[in-house]
Length: 191
Image 1: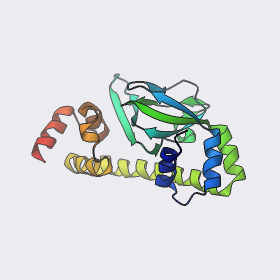
Image 2: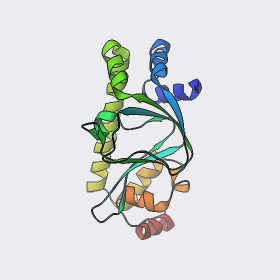
Image 3: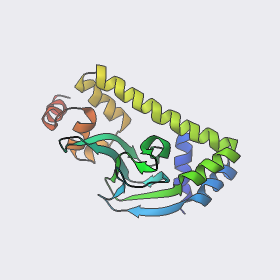
Image 4: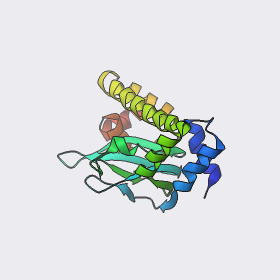
């Protein structure tokens, strides 16, 4: 297993997580290489896993009633993908997750991780930290979408994802920002 890359995921969330707790999580994980364009999960499909992204870029998205692709979020390794509890209902996925580059991810059964959190207070705190970060990111995005200008949203996107603008299709970024690709092109030319 790629322990150094896994350590980067832990350090991003909770740098002081003990070696023992890290090893307990690592023991639950199995690795997967995901080629660009592959889906980790999709709406309506059974999903009972947690995911740790070691390499690559993943996005979560939905399709509108008109079939338009709506990007919800981006994840650049090292990262924890949205927790099982926030992206599933009755064991089925509520959204898509797509590899935007070749990726390496670790997968573990959500129930096994939950059982581990019950036994290990440090891992419970880790899980709660991941949930808090996920909630904070969603609330911040809601506030930006409701009250910020498109230009300000783009500037914040650039701060949050420093190199992503040059690595993923601009249509996905425009969707994430809630604007058209034409508007994004104009904003990029003006900044």
